[in-house]
Image 1 (spheres, rainbow, N blue to C red):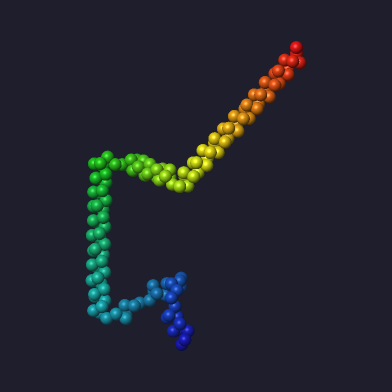
Image 2 (tube, rainbow, N blue to C red; image 1 turned 180 degrees about the vertical axis):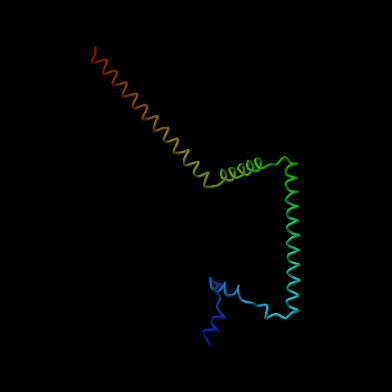
Length: 137
C-alpha cells in the first residue's frame, strides 16, 4: 500500500510507458454527462478562438508586408541594416577595442622589426659589395 501511495506523490515528469498509460486511459467515465457537454462546448469555443486568432495574425502579417513595401523596406535592406547594426555593436564592444589596440600595437612592432631587418640586410649587402669591389681592385 505504501508503494502505491508513494507512486501518487512522485514529482518526476511522466516517462515513456507512463505517458502511454495516461494517454490510453479513459477519463470520460469519471465525468458526468453535464461535465462532458460543458467540456465539448469549451473545446468548440477554443477551436473557434484559435481559428479567429490565426486569421487575425495572417491579416496582420499581410498588412506588415504592405507597410514595408510602401516604405521601400525589403529583405535585402533589412539584412543590410541588421549587418550594419551588428558590425557597429562589434566595433563598440570592449573586446573588439582591446583586440584592435593589441593588433595595432603588434603591427607597429612588426613593421619596425621588418624595417630593422631590411636595414641590416641592406647594410650587409653594402658591406659585401664594398668587399667585392676591394677584392677586384
